[in-house]
Length: 159
Image 1 (cartoon, rainbow, N blue to C red):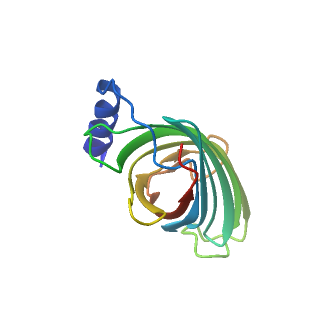
Image 2: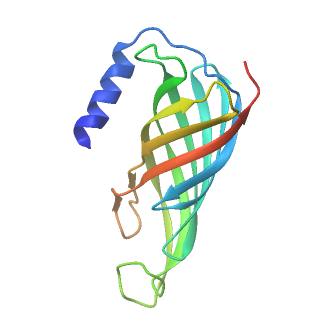
Image 3: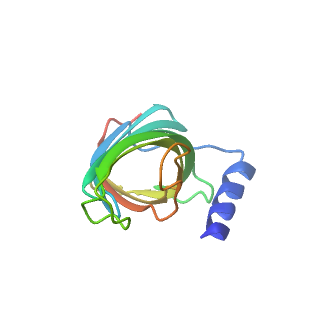
């Protein structure tokens, strides 16, 4: 996975041509490790803000991300993106979290994201697959390295 992240990042940095996204706003669902909602808004053709509200370990977390998008291979409807942001959440260890204690946990930290996205040309939907590691300096667990996500969004607002 590290090689994929390095390859995607390198492609985005090397690519000088940036192409506009096919939509301005997308709202949908995200799964499998964290199940929840995703909303993405493009404020420039290559820059977006994404908000996630998800459930994990019997609790919830909120993440806000800034993302850079590009079409590194020139394929119609296919984009790669990367970015960073922050998250806040809470859960109870009485749930299915691996740590067996009766404590409640608050979570605050920084988040990275790298992924690929495909926008369908004949229907107003897109699909994305991403990797979203997180570092929580004040809480346990310190690192979340298992956050892979598949998102499906309804999109509108061509730019």
